[in-house]
Image (tube, rainbow over all chains, first blue to last red):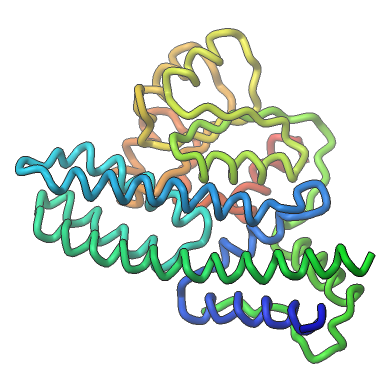
Length: 148
Length: 156
C-alpha cells in the first residue's frame, strides 16, 4: 500500500473511532500536540495510558475480590482511571468508569462487579483499536523514512 | 457530535497532509503568544493526566514542573519556588488535594490555582473552591479553559 493510501486509511480509522464514540475530541488535542519536537508523542501517551489502565483495572479486580471491599481505596482507583480516560479522550471507557463510581458511592459490590465487567470490555476494545492505530502510524513513518 | 477530520477529497500528498495537520493544530490549540515567562506546577497522581497537562502548558511556553502527590507539592512550594499557576487534582495520594490547597494558601501563596478533577458534583466543586482554588475545571484540561487564564496571567 502506498503512503497516501496508508494516511487515508489512518485518518478514516481514527474518524471511525470518533463516530463509534470510542474516542472524543480530547484525542484530537493530543494528536495536535505531536510535532517535530515530540514525533512519537501519541504512541508514548497511548503506551503510558494502557500500562496504567491495565494496572488499575487489575487492582480494582483484586479489591472487589475481597469479602469486605475497601470502597475508599476503590474510589481512588476509579478516580485515576476516569481521569486518565478523559484526558486521553477514551470516551466510552470514561463513561464506563462513571458507572463504577456510582456503584462504589452506593457501596454496591454487585453493581461494582457489573460495572467492572463493562470497563474491562471497553478497555479491551480500546486497546485493540489503539494497537491498530499505532501499527498504521508506524507503517507510515517507515514508508516516509524509506522515501527520504 | 463526532469531530470531522480534514477532507480527503484533495490529493493527499505530503504538503496537503502537513498543512492539514498544522491547520488543525492551530485550530485545536488556540494559538497565543505569551510576553512573559510563566511558571506552573501540575499536581496530579495519575501519570497520563500529569504528562498531558504539563505538555499542554509547555506547548504554550509555560515553564512547568509536575509532582504526583500533595505532600511533595507543599514541600516544593515551601522551598521557595515561585509559581504563577498551580494545577491541582482533588484526589491525590499521601495528602489529598483539598488539604494540599489549604496548606498552600496558608503559606501565603496567592498564585492562580486551578482545581482540575474528574469530580463533577456541585458539592465537590464548592468544597474545592472553599479550600482555595480559584477555578474549578472538570477534566480534561483543554485550551478553551486554559488560554484565557494564561492571557490573564500574562497581562494580555
